[in-house]
Image 1 (spheres, rainbow, N blue to C red):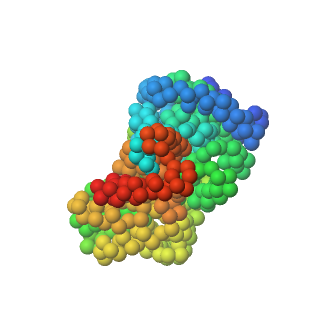
Image 2: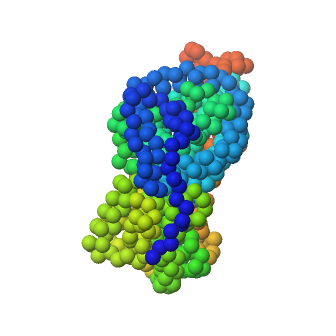
Image 3: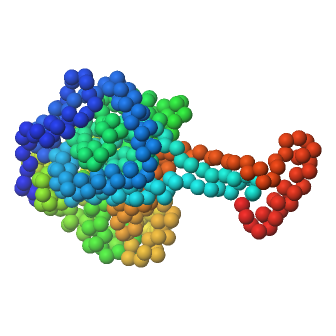
Amino acid sequence: MSNAATRTPAVTPSPARDALVADLIATTGRTAAIPTPATGETLVDLPRSSAEDVRGAVSRARLAQVAWARAGFAARRRILLRAHDLIVARREELLDLAQLESGKTRGQAFEEVFQALSVTRWNAVKARTVLRGGRRRSGIPVALSTRIRYRSKGVVGVITPWNYAISLAAMDVVPALAAGCAVVQKADDQGALSVLALRRAYIDAGLPESLWAVVSGDAAEVGEAVTDEADYICFTGSTATGRRIAEKAGRRLVGASLELGGKNALIVLDDVDVEQAAADAAHACFSSMGQLCVSVERIYVQRRIADAFTAALAARLSDPRIGSGLDHDADYGSLATAAQLDRIRGHLDDALEKGARVLVGGDARPDVGPWAFEPTVLTDVAPGMRVLDEETFGAIASLHVVDDELEAVFAANASEYGLNASVLSGSTRRALRVADQLDAGSVNVNEGYRGSFGSVDAPMGGVKASGIGRRNGREGLLRFVDPVTVSVNTRVIPLPHTGREYARLSGPLVLLARVLRGIRRA
């Protein structure tokens, strides 16, 4: 029997939560009861927004954005760094909300808050360097002088999911603000409180209220309105929804950054420390109970160590400490919603009916919480099973035995997705050689996802059906600006206007081209 953490949070009326929901842009008078995964009780009655609320928020954001863009990098940096310090001061409140809404452990909630701090600090410090523009080589040296500047895109529409509400909001909203944009964000119902608490730190740090508006409600109305009105769209979620957003953005000729689904693979090479590899694999698969876009769902282990690794992984997961307490007692949390539990059961039942076997786990844990489920590893998983072909997004991973590196790479790449991948090896050089062959936007060596996920100076995103665009780093900032090229005729060398003038100048220009080629100048 699995071991359950003992402390369960009590859901009681909270003036602090009421104050947060008052910040939502919502005038319909309708609410939705949002439960906590800890007990199934209603955590908050969340106000519902309308399409008209979105349009009003965008209009106000446009006005605020003009002054924000003109304020300059130094003013924006001061506010972002003050927000950073407020997040540090309010971290316990943010941790509580992340756990109450998502059911994750304290440790996984801390990953979110730490990520928000890293993103805020990086964008505050680096925005000026990345976006200051500068001189570029002109078409005709001396005769022309050319420079670029960056223009903020305007109002950015951000649509975030429930699973990592704090960190995913920060990774899109903060660089947009640092670049001089305004934001209208549709928060998922199950993560709205966390988003609003994060936003409140920025508002209290001096960010104008209308510069970052948060709405909630049905995707068919509120999400569509955000994508209809925004000048640039950031979306994190399913591939199916991402495709629809991409189509709409294409028709409107606005940009979009889409981080979509994943069916992430972990390769375990035969030179690993088996116990360490089992620990790494368990964390890679079941952090936040697998409800993370970069979590591992497929494990490929080389045959020579397959028996030992399988036994070590099963032993590590055979008595998991599951819980939703507001402390660090639990190693594994709960699924976030009843819909998530139904999805997991559907994938598991389909796999078992088609011949898969449960290595470890496989049972719900209503004694822990209404949607708690054991970390589950399946063997004998084959094509045609939903658990292999579709993104499961929680609680289940499949274990496969391969003969060599090449087979492992082919199997890992045999997916329509390409978000994240991992390689475990006793040799970094060997692992990097394998990593270079994997079709994924990020690859982690001797780690599941935290290396790339936490490297806010480096881009993060997917290939194939896992999305387009990148967040984090220079690439994440450059999403939110348009480069503007400004070129000046210096009149040091007269440029031609007539046919005879072109004829006189063509010879010297050809000579210039040959000289530049000779000295290998662009």
